Image (cartoon, rainbow, N blue to C red; front, side, top):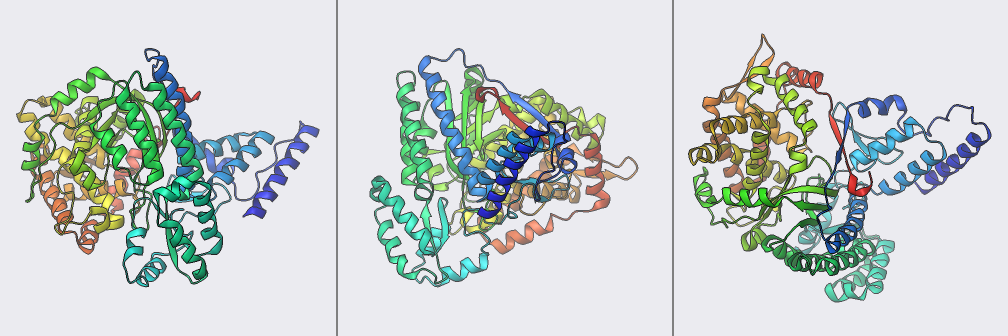
Amino acid sequence: MKNLFLILLSLTLATACQTQNNKTMKPASLPNGYWSLEKSQPLIDETQTIHLTTNLSELSTGERIAIEKLLLAGNIFQRLYEKQRHPQAQSSHHILVQLDKANSSQATQNLLNLYRLYRGPIATTLENKRESFLPVDPIQPGMNLYPWKITKELIEAAVKEDATGQLREEVLDLRTVVRRVEIQDIRADIATLRKYPALKTLHPNLLGKLQALETKQGTGGIYTVPYAVAYADDLFTANQLLNEAADAINKDDWEFARYLRNKARDLLTNDYESGDASWVTGHFKNINAEIGSYETYNDELYGVKTFFAFSLLLTRQAETAALRQAIKGLQSLEDSLPYLNHKKIREDIPIGVYDVIADFGESRGINTATILPNESYLARRYGRTILLRANILREPNIFEDMTRKLTAAVGEEQAKELTLDGEFYNTVWHEVGHYLGVDRTKDGRDLGIAFEDNSSTLEELKADLVSLFVAKALHKQGYYTDAQLRSVYAAGILRVLLNNKPRRDQPHNTMQLMQWNFFMENDLLSFDQTTKTLHIHYDKYHDVAGKMLAKTLDVQFQGDKAVSEKFIDQYTTWDENLHGIVAANIRAQQKFRFRLLKYTTLGE
């Protein structure tokens, strides 16, 4: 690829000179491998740009300095995320930027916007297929966290050669990069440890392990290194920025400053307990931040590797206080769920309502809410924190398109039930739903280890169904009015609607289709062949949601991946005479299929 990049750079310079010498000429066509204007424009036409503005004027000088430092750290996390997903992401983006500078056109501008939208050089087409729009390799199931183009079978063969079982544990670790045993990689990792003595101290056995591997290079084996070593240069810079931000904000919010220092250390230790404990149990004032590598949605090989995210948030104080008061009494809701072996939970969940200042990496996009950390042992020890992004959840343009989508599927009369309140509360209790229910299999395994690439689908399905199941009890308690309950239920149906057949590697879309089919099978939804619309039978809602939730919780508790495969397969059929018709109606009514977020705090 290096030769290709050099050729493209040469083409760039030649194009620039040609344009300068003859400005009346039409812009030259893009080199091979770049999408043409004709191919990129349909996606751009379906993309809505949303500008998020956050008022920081009331913050102190120290808080604003801290934000400046944290935004710089966020940019590092954005680069790391793109690198994790594709080895040619950054180099291909650099060449695209140069092409645009030399001979800017609508075609190059479109491609830059697509790179921003998809956070890399691979687009999702209008037909829900993934294609590269820049001259790079096709996407791989393991992304760039496993040897590029390696198969799961080859990894399993290498793991079986290790009688100790340690290599399997390292491969399935949340925050390791898997490499082939090749001399150039081994020596580069050794050089990193020597460059940063702190890493040798924090990972005391790693140098000896790498040195022993030098004699085994070329044997077809694999080894792992922690993210702290694989991304050392960037993470040491991020560490420094987090500490500088902590110094700046210490007088205004010493608890947040301590969290930043703990998290800075986590990035180097590869162990997040210190930072996550101070995050979940801390009482911060005006600013909060998600910092680290948590979600596994992009790992299509084993479903265990986490991807970097950075989210900087401004607290809505009054709304946060009111919401925390409103959700007390969670243990009774946990005990009401349709499964045995209920767990004891923390009732005072650190939940907050925020305005997004800026998102980076995995968290960038129309991300309405987050609950972290995901590791079950950390959740048991410290609980989890829930971050609700109000300026996205309540963005009027987004809600308008949601209403249009629901109307296309169920008709105008039933779509009137949907309100911003319903969507907001459905999201709140989806996130709480992650905290409730099964978090380990009956034999004590983490769900991610037990179900691998199916774990995210099952977990998102559980959270959706918990939100719908507890709604009746919340209504009985007076938490929901009659109208709010109806709106939450309407939002639950909006949630399952799809405008394209999902791919199996899309956890959210897959579990949405599962609900759609289960709801049809159990008469919560019916399809009118005359009007070509769905109809919601609200009287069946609680029982049907509870029935599917019971099945989902049982599958999680049993911990059998083969059973989970059967469950997912059973409810992911796609009928063009049903799903296809509704999806086509949605596509015809929706103004936009994609949304590109930009942040005024980043000067966008």
